[in-house]
Length: 618
Image 1 (cartoon, rainbow, N blue to C red):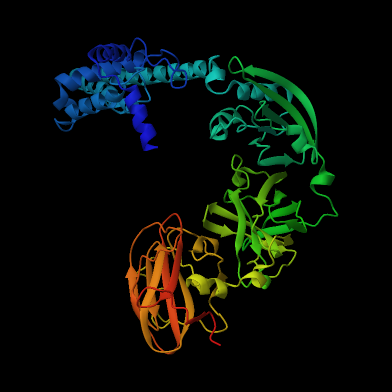
Image 2: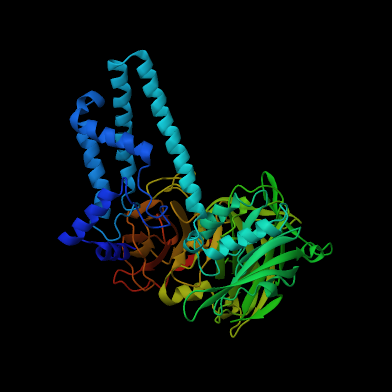
């Protein structure tokens, strides 16, 4: 972004004398003769001031030069305003396309000050040198000038909005669709625009909202057939914007859920080889398919009650490694939402089968990024498609597809919804899950290679008790009950969660939320055959601390990236006693990745293979 911004500044700069003189003349014309020509910013050529504002500005500019002490509280105020005016115009003065009002947007502040100075001088002069009648007449005149300026501004704004070029500068197809809906659909018919088929980022908040007020009382929404599609319980108008390379497949997507009827179609020519087609449809929902009585639904909610009714379809019973899984989730709102909710679809090992929650694939996104949950209506169903690729190296075994719905920013969940009906066990913390059998080229992970066998190869500990996280805390915050030095996870695991990783690099973002501004603890037992010395080999992203048998052996406050290799950056010396030794590691997180690795090394740096690492003392 910085490189692109610098390149743009260099490309637009105009510092030669001829260009500077030309730009200066253009800016001198801006107040009263001709202003910015760009339709996006201005009614083309409309001067900065109308007559009323221009008179006040001109008087204020003059008295700010000749009588500043009588107008301003401090003598240096007037020079400061002049300096502000010059500095705000300077970016446009030394660049191309002058007078560019956006590059000089700050000019409105000194301009308003000068106009206020002019009005102040007129009023105070009339009060000091004239009669009471003259003073009242001056006040009335000033009020009239403000009124005239207001009327002029409203008229110019209406001319700007109605300018034919607006269709082209602000997406012609959207305006034409809005015009058609307004003229041909009843006021109680909802309408939905398809704004992102050409990657018009932010278009919903810009152009569609620009016309939403004009379409009232119709409900106005947005749809993207590639990701999410809202369907109300009543017929609604839709736009489908299609190209040869970005085909919305509108009717194909809607066919299982609704009937479509074409209303209107336009073809737009972008250049000599590219055309775009926009089709307007009237869509009538098939309610017996959207909400069938014989199809079970899942209710998602929080402590305040149920929020969504969820109907997932396309959930397979079995797949092969390397297959793709496509799940269609239908969300129906039961009450107004406080957040724009996200959905995560994860492929996990069944905890009962693998003694851990290994993530094999995951998709996380807004349920509907262009039409957030806070805008949904009670009679709408949002259809969202999610896809996962089962890794080709996934071993055979039992897995689960887990759906998580939460509100807030990614990995900063402020509201995690849980299944409220029907009743589910708490295997996945109240989230909806679907059992799945995977047939792979290898046998199950437990039968093929265990975490202890993997640890025996390179020494890195792969099974830990996880305590936390503790959001909002950092490395120096002792948040464990009884203190960090004295903490031990009981053999029954109370207060901790058993985690397991196939990789030596323990990715904490798979197990802890949120994954920014957080801290977590990891605990394991190390059984040594005798008293001995060695090293604790560690690496982390970010800061890390370690305790062995209650003694702090390492603390490194750092913000860093952790490479995925056999590298131990932190190597504190340790002394193991004969028997079981308690190892507690603490890792905090700023932003980005969150991970660590740890192993026990001999004094010569080799892996200490004759110690036993376990989460429970046998």
